[in-house]
Each structure stands twice: as structure tokens, then as C-alpha cells.
Amino acid sequence: MKKKVLFLLSLIIILAMVLTACAPKAQPVQTTGPVTISIWHGYIETEEQLFSKAVNDFMAANPDIKVELLAVPFDQLQNKFQTEAAAGTGPTITMGPQDRMAGYAAAGLLAEIPSDTAFLSSLVPASVEGGKVGGKLVGIPVNNKVVALFYNKTKVTEEPKDFDSLLAMAKDNGMAVTADWFHNYMWGPAFGAKFFDDSYKMVLDSAEGAEAYAYFDTVCKSEGVTCDGNDGDMDILFRQGQVAFRIQGPWSSGDYIKDLGADNVGVMAVPAIPGKASPRPWNQSEMGSINVNATPEQMAAALKFFEYFTSADVQKSFLNEANWIPANASVDTSSNPVVGGFLKQVPSSDPFPVASELGATWDPMGNAMTQILEGVKTPAEALAEAASLINTANNK
Image 1: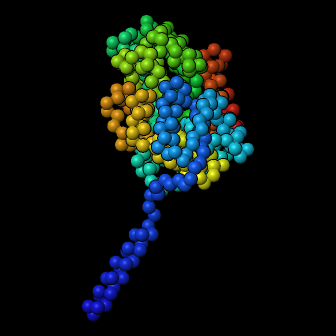
Image 2: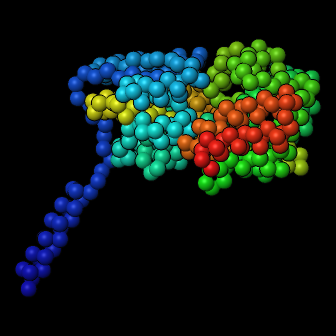
Image 3: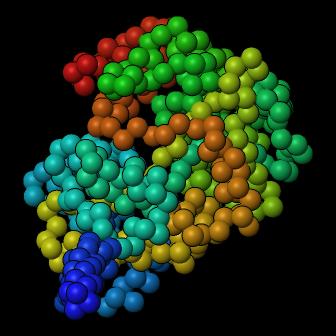
């Protein structure tokens, strides 16, 4: 009897060992032999300099991998990648926001990234989830982004308590607002308006939406406020000290600090509108995606690059120099007051829609912002036209 028991126990132990050995494990990234990969990106100024340095450092540490970089103007990058990837060419890696990634995936232009890739476990889980389209991982988060309110400490000595006090302070000190759709999504949620319903039909053409963008119009026509669709021009106003306030994302903060000095740049959440809620900008991750045309060797090299680029040391350098909100969960942000300001905005932000339907919104909504500001259409008329164009394009 004892022999039978011992035999059964031994058998159980052996089976357990076999099952453990067969269980799926996180897979380290491995490459074999010399390989060349290419990366297209839309970074400029401080971000471009840091990215180039990171790539050079990566090549120095991985001499068998050559990386060719191409900086493409942000507004041209999407069409350029789509055209060339669809033709069977294009870069190994493209960098960009989540909505572009979703559109590329819908067109079958992105390679699926193995979800058991080991380094993914070091990244913010919600950001990794944001890289999935249709349940497949097609993007690797490299940072998180949300717009907030910058202010020049040499021009104002205290933070505005609400949006009315912000406008009062801007009257004498100036504020710059980019009059595009991305920067101005935030007004709708403050007035209870939804942009998409659950089927991704655009539903902003509502009474709440009209009220929200009438307020946007009022803000832009307030004394001391400059609204223009040219993001770079609005950045220059703040960098040169011509305005005290600027609603912008962390991508410009390195340039602001370079021009104004680290001690003179403050960041806070966009203040609440009296009688309404706080404006809620989109909170998005920037993604790196791999071209479906990549060879297996290029795929492995691309993953090796992302393992390096999302490592704690590299992410910390972008935190310190460009004020990136890290994708790596282990990076301590407590010593960076600029990033601390953006993190105060995060609770009052909306998740960026990871949906290909978003791609059809940019031009109609950008035109709606322009029509409202120029008085060509009322907010209700402009939003109704935009909704018709967007929903027709998306077959809704």
C-alpha cells in the first residue's frame, strides 16, 4: 500500500513539473545577426533631439542593429505611412497617437505584437490595453499625454481659481489657445455633452454641445485671448513671454523651459467653469507600431528597440528633459513639478477613443471650430454639419 502511495505521489510531482515547464512564460526579446530597421516619427525640437540620442545610444549598445530615422511633419505622417505600407513598403516602425494606430490596424497595416513579450509587464497596464485593437496588441505605449494649463510665473503670481478668474487674469496678461479639435474636445464634457455614443456615432450635435462650443467662442473672443489653428504660432507666443497662459500638452514643455527657465514655468489642471464641470481633455498614449511588412528579423529588432526605449533609464531621461509622463510604471515622477501638474489634470480627463471612427472626425471638427470662431455658422449649425459628415464617413 505504501509503495502505491509513494508511486502516486511521485507521479503527481512529475506531472506538476511537466505542466510547469509547459506553462506559457513571458518571452524575452532575442535577435539574430545584423539587421536594419527604420523609424518614422513626427517629433520636433527637444523631443527630436532626445529621440535621436536614444536611437544612437541603442545602436551603440546593439551594434548588429542599424536604425534609420526619418522625421516627417506630423500632419503628413499618417498619409505617408498609410500609402507606403499599403504598397508593401514603408518604415519598420511608426510613432504616433492612438487614433492613427487604430486606423492603421483597421486597414491591416500593423503587425500583431506578441502579448507575452516580457518587457510589456513593466509598462502601465492601462496604457498597454490602449495599444489593443480588436483584442490584438498592435501598439506599444511610449508615453502618456494630456493637455493642461501652463502659466508663466514671471507674469502671474497665483493660479486662477476657476475659468472666470483665468479670463480675468488673461485680460491683462494674455492666453494662447490652439483652435483645433484636439485641444478643444474638453469643452463638451464640461457641459455634459457626449462626442461618441457606444456605437461610435458622433452625437455632439446636441443642445449641450451647442452650449459648450458657444462657450468656446466666448473664451476665444475674450480680451487678451488669442485663438488660432496654428499650434506652433500659439507656442511661440508663450515661449516669447507675450502671453502668461497656454493650454497645451507636455510635448511643448521642454521648449518652454528652455526659453523661459525651469523656475518660471508652472502647470495646473484647466480650472472649472463656474456653474459647470471642469473641462475634460483627452488622455492618450503615444504608440509605437510595427509595419505588417516587417521581416521576422526586423520584427525582433523592433521589439528590442521598444524594450530599450521603454526601459526605466530612457523613460526617466525623457521625463527630465521633455517632461514626458512615462509609460514605464516604475519611473518616479515626484521630483518633476511640470509632470506633477499634468498628473493633476488626469482625474479630469477622458480616455482617448481607440477607434478607427475617430479618423473621420479631425477635418470636419477642425472646420467646425473655424466656422464658429469666424461667425460663418452658429455652434449648433457647425456641429450639425460636422456630425453629418462624420457619421456618413463612418456609415453610422
